Length: 121
Image (cartoon, rainbow, N blue to C red; front, side, top):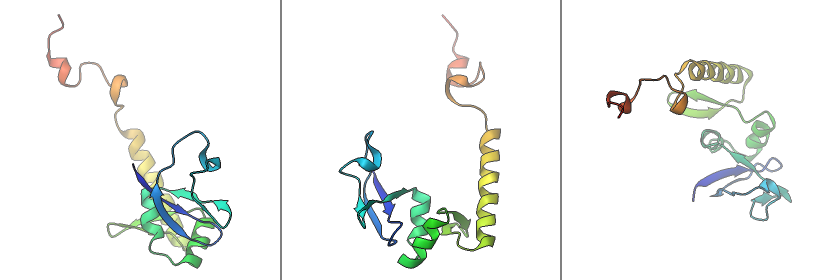
């Protein structure tokens, strides 16, 4: 099973446990709870940033959108306006790079890949 990180928006508590699968989502009895409410799941990148904060700082960070910025090879929480602007810039750059990539899978251009060199029988 895959381990995931969850954060409580009320107290800033951080919990790591197995990912909860199913259609019920936060209504599932297996979903982690804190302060009598369901916790929010964090991405792997957000979890790396959240571990660098104290509980009170984590509450404020979660309320402002849980943004992270890549600095010196590590993900850090974007807590200042300048850091949030840098995070938005990084996100836009990443999105543009993803759009520019060639499509994968069945939608790829014909005649590309390993099977293209084999004769059709």
